Length: 216
Image 1 (spheres, rainbow, N blue to C red):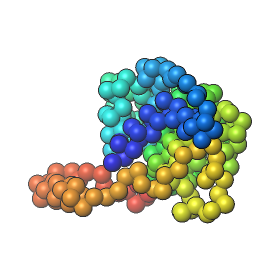
Image 2: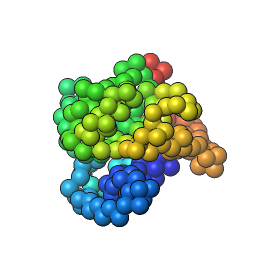
Image 3: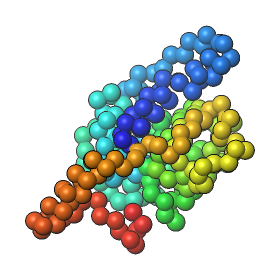
Image 4: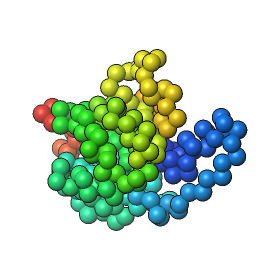
């Protein structure tokens, strides 16, 4: 489900859909032409199971893909890996569409503030489908208003549902979805639980185990 949402959002931003929707509301026949996928870099911030599925969905369309993680990742065809705070600025500077998939921890809270969001190339876009605490909303809106950032698709917020007077509701460069990027479906969840039970019974490592100290 998350890979579907991210793929949809990347395509919407790539093809300028927020601008086209605004143009429709203004009855403006705005013929916007987008670059090819091969000319855009999608930066996936958080490269665990979800991030890897998103990369797999995006690769066939030809996007250049970057990943950023807290720890190093193994070499992978079609993905340039970055890790650690020392490489965060370089990762951001090379990402035209940024996808936030990080968990909510003390270290990730407002990790994307004005300073770091400013490192994205001009006219970049942001997708947040992980946890709302990743982005400092006032800073994001400031950079959208200044036109440094082109658009944002936000599925998660620090407090949900967001209040009626939240500025994101009516911001022309923001598309909101109500925390629906990925849901747990009983059929597939049960199948995955059974898979891990089999791993346990056969003395194989369990997959995607929560680390209580790290918080994810």
